[in-house]
Length: 154
Picture: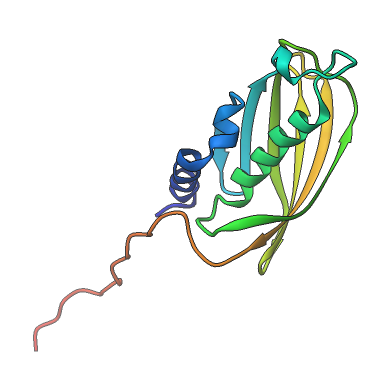
């Protein structure tokens, strides 16, 4: 199985069980090994007392992109720590996009950066997530046939 096929199969398996991302109207726009792009339209119900998108929804979008990126290797991976810096407001009707990419991955730990932008490309937030791989996988991997050389007669 190629790394891209593994990432796609992992994303399909996760998406089927991800009620939170689906419930908020997110879409999974792209997936690759160590990378993911998700987007979401800010609804009126997502705005706060300042009439801007509540930071928790921006964090959740970034966190979902983080989850898909770090789970793209068919290994169950969870967040160990995450932080966000809000740079600009988002408003009802804005389409936000979170692009996650792997910064480092070693052993069971990983670091991912996620940039959240609006439709005009303005940066709304920067998120950094630290991941930890745990037991389990998203789907059973097909067994690979051992490579054999040409048959010889005895």
